[in-house]
Image (tube, rainbow, N blue to C red; front, top):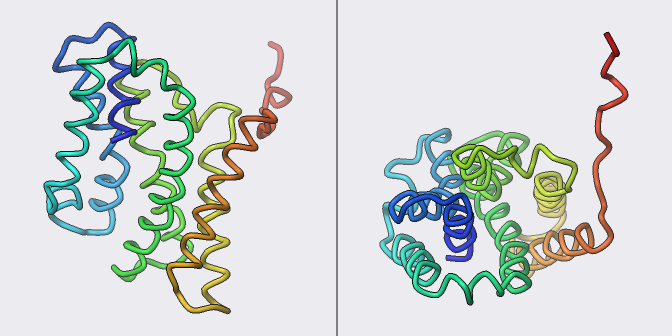
Length: 194
C-alpha cells in the first residue's frame, strides 16, 4: 500500500491523468515482485493469487487521490514504511526464489529486484533516472541484507526471529544511509574530455 501511495504521488506530481497516476501507483507496488515471478517461472504472479495485495494497492491509490494534499505531508512516515518494505520484500523475494530452485547468488538478486524494481519501472514511466542508478544507497542495502541472511542461515535455523533481525538490519541501514548521506562513489573520473 505504501509503495502504491508513493507511486501515485509521483504520477500526480508528473501531471498524469487519473488512470495514469493509478497505473504508476500499481506498478510501483507490484512491479518488482511481478518481474521476479516472471523470471523464476512462478505463474500466475504473486499479487494475482491473493486479492489482498490488489486491495491494498487500490486502497493506497484511492487514499492518495482523495487526500493528496494530506498524504504528501506524510513524507516521514512513508519513508519509514518504504525502508521497512524494502527489507521485507528483499527477504521474502529471496526465499521465494530459493523455493523455486534458484541458485542462492541469483536468489539474492531476485530479492533485491522484488524490493526495488517497482520503483525503477515507476521512474522510467515518469521519465526520471531511477533512484537505484543514482548515488543514493538503496539497492546495495538489499543485496547486502540478502547476502547476510543467506550467510546466517548456514549457521542458524530459518526462523522468524532471524528473518525479522535481517529485515531490521536493512531498515536501520537504510535510515542511517539517508540520515548521514551515505553514497556510493560516482564514476565521473572515468569520463574523458574530448
